[in-house]
Length: 602
Image (cartoon, rainbow, N blue to C red):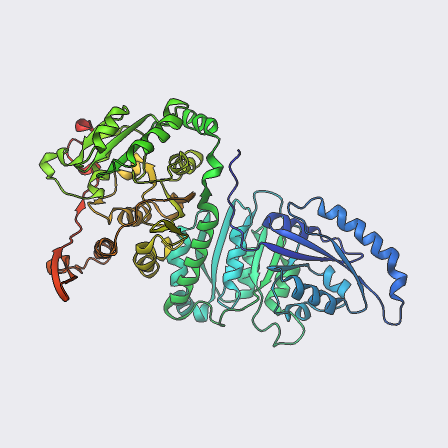
């Protein structure tokens, strides 16, 4: 199966009206570039006091033209033709019925045929609206989005990011008299936009903003602008700035208006709102482009071919603690499919936390090397915890890519491994991939769909949205199925306990940026659910981990030693009492900082 192409698509459905005498070449090209489903609506205007039935031949010709146009579209919707004496009202009625994400019109021919002004169309609040004036760029386009504030700036930015281009220039334009004010209000954009791949952000100050935009347009293949907020209030026109751009720009121009405009000052005070909107765009684009499905990588021969082409080696490390009930099936399933039948994996190791059951014996019997992490790196001491096992697994594996999966998976399938590996083999720029899945909660003999992931939803994701909003698109930040390139993993610290997943996610983000992260849908995962008290301790550890990362960001200690103890509520013989337990999360340094790391690898 050929992997899908992931594209940022702010519009899933587009409506494009077609009228006799209108050849919407630029609008069709834009619709094709956006990759959305396109509904072509044929409109045959009828003059007053003219018989509608007399236009039957015109309607037939228009239907034929629509069929030809639809052949060039990737996702055409059913065609329809309306013959009407009120084309504007008819168009608005179709828009309200079908509710497209975007109504697309070519300027000026659509408005001449509809016998209306652009402001008449822009008055419609049923959907987003874009006016396009060609010629539409074919390839290697230089796209410029001038941002001046205003209610439609975010939509203009989203549109610019969604159109294939070689170079996207986002320009914060300000007049000389308001330069300081605009710089302050766009501070958030200046911080966030440089993190977007392929996006360049800069400021431009001019004594005449209109001339400043026209200067930018002279070097652009495509200029994207938000409509003027005063378009409807000012009467019939689009405003001097928009009209001059439409008339005088040598390249294509798109003017876009949002269905629900933001407040007039989109940028907000102190740059706060601009930062929030830029983060929203950043996360939306990442989610669209960097969210994969395990089925994309089920062609294992293709995965092996990608691995060989890149000269990579791959290790699977299995952390375990008393998993005799499931570890054997996990090893047999993965080893049989991904090592014995096809050489996708070069090695599998069990990194044990000193199990007291038959976990290590079962793994050794199946030919998997076994290591007890408490016995590795004795000079660093022995700590308990899953994170400690993951950190020391870097010592006992040799692959360029390392994947970890938990050994308590009841419904084990090879996809838990090849799903995580797929994006790393497909996209060399990715450094780290997280798995996500549906997690049914076992209630006695029954499974409650979607009941799992309680710590994720009640602790981890709220913390991420509050302090690390760039990671808010990560569906399951605490999942135990993930992997990355050794060159990246050995540069980040590891928490020793349950804070390892969220800590590693934050560190990878801050060191390599959001584009280096991806996530993959692994379908459903069934495992042994933990009791509520254990989840409470896990939440306490995760909160400590996030606070530690914030301490590093702000250079201020947040957690005193006393805060590492947790008072647990107990109930016995009719009485409540408190039991104090130390639940402290500690961190190991990046493995590459360990003395002689390369020399002491097992």
